[in-house]
Each structure stands twice: as C-alpha cells, then as structure tokens.
Image (tube, rainbow, N blue to C red):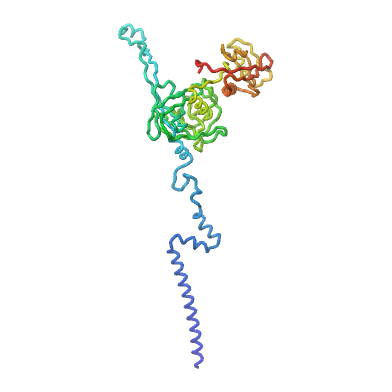
Length: 420
C-alpha cells in the first residue's frame, strides 16, 4: 500500500519539472522577441546576420546601397533631370545683349503725294530727317572668364552701344571687338573678371535624333530654355534662306525665336555644340545653329585681328543637272552640253571680273569635278573647300570643258569688302 503513493509522487515531480522547464523556455522566447521588437533600428543588421543568406539579402539589400552610387540629381527627393543639370551649369554664362543702332529716317510717303505738296509745300518736312535709333535684343555666351563673349553679327552689327546683362542681374557696357557678316559671328568684350563660362563640345560625333537644348532671351524673356533634337546636319545657307552666308548649319526643332540669336545650343552633357542664329519665318519647328567649331575659329580671329579674311575665287555656281543646263542656255544664250557620263559636278554660271577665277582662266560652262583630288557634288562642297584654304594657297580644280577634262590652278584672294 505504501509503494503506490511513493511511485505516484515521483511521477508527479517529474511532470511538474517538465512543465516548469517548458513554461520557462516559452516565457524566455516571448520576452526575447518582445525585446527585439522594441530594440532600436541600429540592432536590425545584427538580427539579420543570424538569418539564412537568402533571407538576409532580401532584408538588407536596400540598406546596403551606397548613397554615392546615385548620380547628382537622381535622388528620390530631386526633380532634376539631365536638361535641368545642363542648364544649371551653362545658364549663368548666357547673357542678354541690348544694342542700339542708327537707322536713316525716311519721309513718309504721304509727304510726297502731289495733293499734299500743293497745299503744304512750305510746311513739308525736309527729306533729310535725322537718323533714328533702333533697339534690338539678342543673346550671347561667355567664352572666357575675363569677359570674352560670342554672339551673332546681326545682333550687334552697326550698334553704337551694347549693354550686356548677366543672369545674376549685373550689367556691363560691352565693346564690339569684331563682326564677320559672312558667317554671322561677332565678339564682344566686357571689363570683368572671374565670370562663369561655358564648356565647348564638338559636332564630330553629332547625329540626327540626339538631344538639343537651347538657352537665350527670346522676345526679351531672359534665360528661356527650350529642348528638342538635332533634326539634320550640314544644311547649306541656301537651304536655310540666307545665301550670302558661308556656313553649314545644324538644324534643330528646339524652339528658337527672335532674341535667341547668339545663344548656345547644348548637347545632353551641357556642352556647347552650336550658336543659335536663324529661324525660318515661313515655318514652325525649324531652327538653325552655327557649328561651334566654325563660330570659335571666327571668334579667335576676330579677337586677334578685329576682322576675318575669307578666301575668295569669284565664281557663281549651281548644282549640275539637265534642267539647270537648259535654263542657263536659255537665259544666257549659250550652248552648254551636259556630259554623256552624267557624272556629278558643279556648274559655273558666272565669273566675276578682276577675280582669281577670271585670272586663272575659268569660264562660264565649266563643270568642277574635284578640288585637290576630292570630288565635289554641290556648291556648298566647293564653298567649304575654298573656306578651308588659305589666301594665296593654290587650289587645283579638276574641270570638264567642251568634252575634255583638265586641271586649272587657282589662288584664292581675300574677299572684297563690298561682297561681304
């Protein structure tokens, strides 16, 4: 009888001990988890370190991203994009140019009316009225921290005073150092130091479809930004509608309006690839810029010498075609014959007197096939070859005349001032 209670007592002790151990472990686990939940965020990586690698990666990959891996302007709290970044870099170096020029005043047509003269002859104003001042606004950009500014010739040409205004509001009196109407490039100098400057790029790798950003002061609205793409390259001055210029233009659909002239055209890195110069009045979405290589070359010569001497042959040219030959024959009563081989070339339709071309023996009807061994297909090709030469150098023109091919050597002279 006494053995049963003793055995029961031992079993009860073991059961009670097991319950105490299990309950203690549960309570300890609960307390650990509760403390972990209340622990500071800084202890989270320590907790994750004890987890399997796959789970640990998924929990910590965002925290492991280095802040410096993000590009400027790409943070989650930033609204900047590459256009805004380019403008931020270049904008301070874009200036507004206000110019005044004297324009002859003409008497109104009404003063020349016979009826008016009959009754008001004595009071009729003199036909030689004083000149009036014409004001215009354009753009420019700073090339050098000492105050060298690049702009268009038509912005400052004939100006008596030029005022330059920076984006930060500072105003300077500007000196027009030189103007080249042949390329529509001009340079201005202001007396200042430590000015913001632009970074010049290159058009060598430029292609249609790439980004284009224009900055200027259209219609007097300072530091206006427009963006688009490069639409085409190598547009001739004839195509642009200004045949008296010697430039192969960049075409863009970035909005360019009156007042943008002289401002920079940028690529997506904020580098200047051109100078905005022309718009087509009869079209929308067509803007044109002078390649920066051409603008910078002319600017350097203007700063150095005040003028630019352009090589000159003295010929008038058209692209060779059967229609053009027939037209020239009718207009000038000539008997030009198109070569049977239909090879491309440039037809000379005029030779100026006292010109290098006349002295070398070039004639109307000659077809220029190549210059210095390089084929030419259009007048802009010839123009570019001449512009790239030096005054006094020899250019070997391969021409076709009267069914025969021959080579004529021509030495370019400086372009006369009355033809600029």
